Image (cartoon, rainbow, N blue to C red; front, side, top):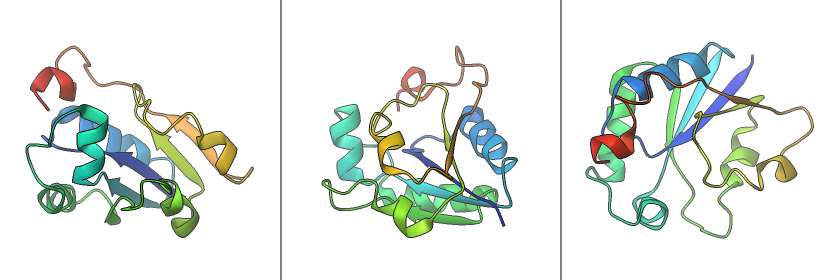
Length: 132
C-alpha cells in the first residue's frame, strides 16, 4: 500500500483544496491529511484561522477524499514528527507551499518521494485571495 501525506491549513475549503487532495490521492492508495493546529496557523499566517482546528478537521473528513485526517503536532520543536509516525511513501505539497518545506528533504528517508501538486485556477482559488 502506498501512503501519501498532505499538509495544510484548510481553513475555507475551496476548489483548489479539493484539487490538491484529489491529485495527491492519485499518487497512492491511502491519503493522510494533516491539518495545521490553530497556533501554527497564527504563526504562519499572522492571524487566527476563521474555523478552529476541530472544525477544519471535520470539513476535510466531510469531503470524503482522505482516508485519514489528523491534527498537526503540538510541539513546535518537532513539526516533522508526524512524518516519522505515519511513514508515508509520498509527501504531496501544494504548488505554492513553502512553510516547513526547507528542512523536509533532510529529515525524510531516501525512499520517501516529494511531489508538487499543480495549481487549480490560482487566480481564483487561492486561500490568501479568499481571505483565509
